[in-house]
Amino acid sequence: MRKIGTGQEALSDDQLQALVNRDGLPRHVAIIMDGNGRWAEMRGLPRIVGHREGIHSVRDAVKVCRELGIYALTIYAFSIENWQRPQDEVKELMTLLEGYLQKEMSALMEHRIRFKTIGRIHRLPESVVHWVRQAESATSANDKMVLTLALSYGGRAEIVDAMLKLYDDLQKGLFPKESVDEALVGQYLNTADLPDPDLMIRTSGETRLSNFLLWQMAYTELYFTPTLWPDFRRRDFLQALIDYQQRERRFGRVKNRIRPRRVVRQG
Image (cartoon, rainbow, N blue to C red; front, side):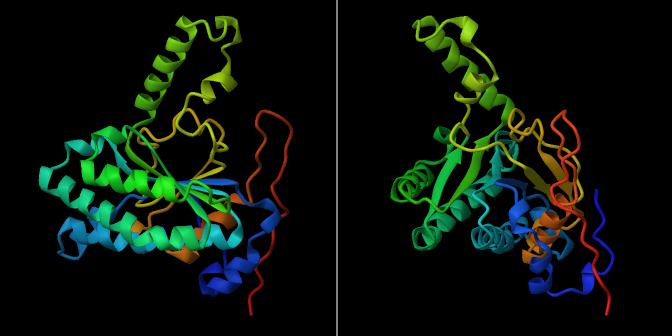
């Protein structure tokens, strides 16, 4: 877990954004938005209230990416494991998701954001699937940014599904087995049309991947923060980007610092 640099706590959002090097931005940011339930419980509120409040954080994250020119944002919204939660909570989450899709459609179109989903979408309620497919279809030509929601998603399940499709194509003789490599496997994943994530942010203090984009995050920079998701707003996202830009991404090669360190001056 990284600590925020000395002096940054006193900076305004605009000052923080000025520290972000636009030439060293990640192309793809993935987020595990954890801590909604705990945020609500700490306040003596039903867990669903935390999920509702977390929508504001989603909007902030999308806005930051859009304004800075980050091409792709993928958010872990509902995992395969989440189906094990109490039925009432799952139902409330599905209702919240459906409402989000309805309300955000105009904003997606206005800002030319393409919406897509990954995961076993067929398990979602029919009404949710309807709005998911409608949003995907309506925004399919948008080219400024891609917003992906991982719904009924699991990294291992995604790899299993990809292997089954690849095996079927091998059996059909579409290509020889000798041609199977990492690049070909990547074409069978849900994210085949996206670059792998450069940065993964997880809130709430947990420090694990929780079955999220396991293949794609082989070389992703990981950023963990104790901030609960409903409290993770614009300045928190900017701080994660600043931290990312201080790291050395070598990919097994020699050092390649994303940008020189900047000194935050006091006073």
